[in-house]
Image (cartoon, rainbow, N blue to C red; front, top):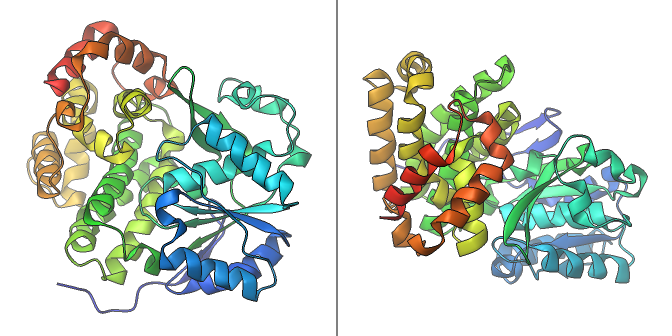
Length: 387
């Protein structure tokens, strides 16, 4: 049943300035002014380019005397070729900031356009390794306004983007503290028109972020608490957002869960993302859906280290049976959204399993998994998942 209560409205400064509430896209010109942007480039993906929410945003930009420039040559798993084209568009238009608009692909690519437009080194020199981010000219990073249109990745509050190397088909995490958007506009009305499978896939991405952050062995009590509440919000609200897409309260709570998942995974990610990153890079699968397929097997792998933690969490989440009950719930949750049980159903083949294993073990997400990952324990999981 649709919840007809008014969705929440708030102004937050954690983890960055967030203008949260229905209809707040109308503040886009004001947000640009507050960020010091007078000639923004709206960066989004091809699927959103012609939709009413995008056209309305461009009209609001035009009304605010910001122009209506848009770059939409962005793939579902954005890569360095998209980035080069976006930087060219930014420089050719004389832009001074970016409105990153969309789901994870538009947000990630938009942030990188703002980051790379003033750099002289290749993007791969800023991979999230050690202090590589200090190589960047921080003064040349353009300000960013982020406007999510899905509730999943949480990239709107992230200090990094995931970009695929088009030559090696490896996803790389590019990090800099100033990639964190200056202002975020979270307007649940923008998510109302999402297709069901996108609502499910992005929502389960937020869930995976929270589950992996909660499972991570690293010490970060704040992230631990945020991850737990994020899981609860997804459990309580994703079914409502999926079956009643115009339920703005459910949509708003899912946007909060996405922000919380991305904030929480400062504590770490794990094997779910270590596998889904290379799978998405090689097979172009939907990231959140891939995470969901991998989650049951990763929970089983990590059971010796996380059982007691989830035994404590499940009463708060409204799930009976402790860790075992949680695992059963996760599979049922996936099934309710028609998530495949095997990667093979998504076109992932066994012919490249050795490559996928090697890429997964090289992924930085491995460091947050509670059980140390190796070929010995990762390959059997991938073999079973591919089927």
